[in-house]
Length: 112
Image 1 (cartoon, rainbow, N blue to C red):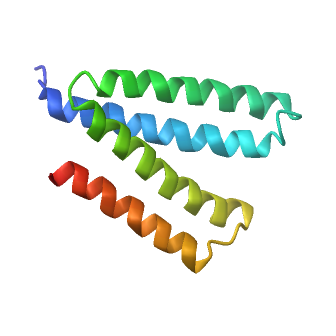
Image 2 (image 1 turned 120 degrees about the vertical axis):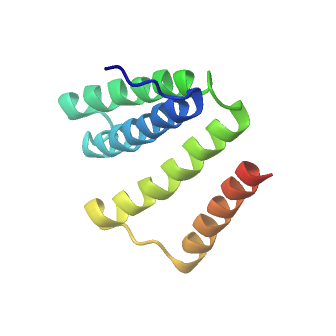
Image 3 (image 1 turned 180 degrees about the vertical axis):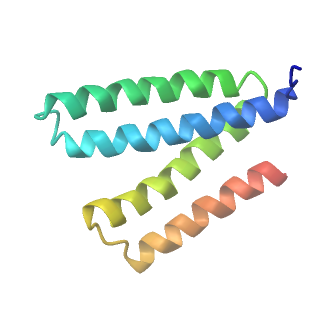
């Protein structure tokens, strides 16, 4: 039995993968300390390249503007959360406001 996914569902899957790869790669780049730690640095670079490859697949089934906005916006929010949880970085009130604006902008683009 084979399962056939709609192009929209497949595109969303690729987009979710792109976000996860980008956030993971960025965290590894932070761990690499400016690429001084070679293994996490190389892994981070490869994951970021993988994120672009997954994004390229996602835009085959969705509008470029929506895919890029979601990828950038969700990636930014998740990266801020990872920075706070994993690296002890503080998100100030203005930062939370900015995150809310990014989320609102992504939603407006998606719904519009």
